[in-house]
Length: 149
Image 1 (tube, one colour):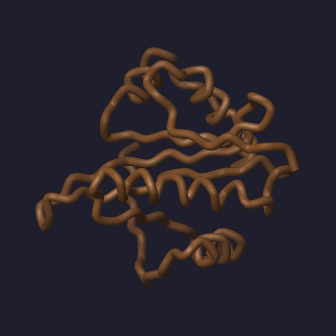
Image 2 (tube, helix red, strand yellow; image 1 turned 120 degrees about the horizontal axis):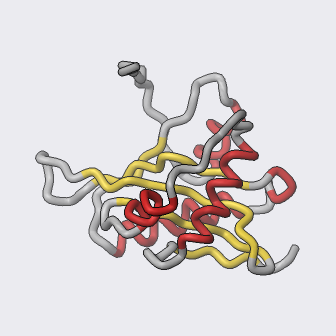
Image 3 (cartoon, one colour; image 1 turned 180 degrees about the horizontal axis):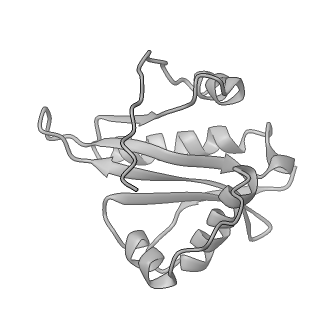
């Protein structure tokens, strides 16, 4: 396999963020997706409570994850919630997703954060097995949403 570069994006790497969003659009089969305003995405990328990690092969983003820092009141150490993680289909099962998990966990540990967590749908066997294989500990929870349409 070709060498893979995995890194956290800085505020000035908007084009790589665009590439990652296109990976999400493809892998998650997002129909009729509209890219948000570049100024909005730039402001999001510049925040200190939003993280983007990408994996690149030959300079092209093939995978990545986004995560949010959650400040808590039970502890001074924040939590980090992985919101999305995807690897382009042709690059799946080659260790890239595992490297992304290792990268965010290492970064968060260095920054003194308490825990990293992620949700996976109970019916998504592939995601459940992936997160277990990367050392994740499953918890039985039910996720409720309140649509605000």
